[in-house]
Image (tube, rainbow, N blue to C red; front, top):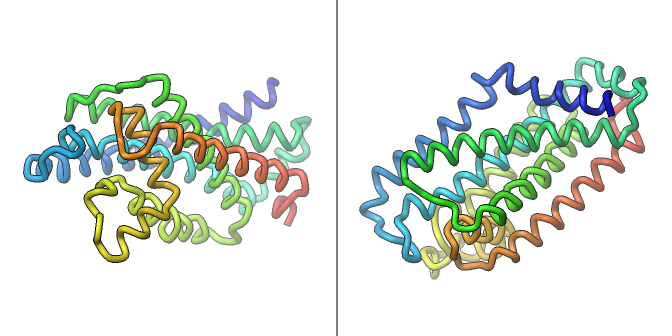
Length: 253
C-alpha cells in the first residue's frame, strides 16, 4: 500500500501545489455565477419551488464544480504522463495496474471534493444555504466525483493531443451540465422548443435534481433517481478504466 498511497499523494499534491491554476479559477467562476445570477438577478426571478432562486441554483453550481474538476485532474494527469513518457515509471514499479488506475482516479475525486467544499463554504456565506440531508448530499457528491473522475481517466487514455481533453470538456461536459437543470427547473422550460426535450432526455438533469433534493430537501426528481444513475455511471467508468489499464490501452504507444 505504500506505493499506492505515494502515487495518490503525488496526484493530490499535483493540484494543491498549483492551486492558483487548479483550485482558484473554478471556485471564483462559481462565486461569480452566484453573485451575478443569484444576488444580482435572483430577487427578480423570485422563488423556485418555494426556495429563493439563488439557493435553487446553488446545488447545480456545486455539482458543476465537482464534475469539471474531478474530470480534468485525471484527464490531464494521464495524458501528461503519456506525453512525457513518465507513465513508464508507473508501469515498471511494483504497483499493479489496478492500483495505478485507482490512485490517479482518486486524485481526481480529491480535487473535485476540495473545490466542491470551497464552493459550498462560499455559497453558505453568500446565500445562507444549509444542507437538508448532509449524508445523502455527501454520498451524492462522492459518487459524482468518482463517476466523472472515471470519465477523465478514459479521456486521458484516449486522447492523442492536448486539445482532446478540452474538446470533451467544451463539447460534451459543458452542454450536458448546462442543459441539466443547473440554472432552471423542468417546469421553467415547459413548452420551450428544443430546450425542454433536451433537458428531459438529459440524464444529468436527474442527477442534478437528485442532488438538489439532498441539498434542499425537495426537487422535481427523487434523490434516489439521480443517485442510481450516478452509481451506475461510476461502476461502468471505473470498470472501463481498469480494463483499459489491464490491456495497456495507449499506455505503451
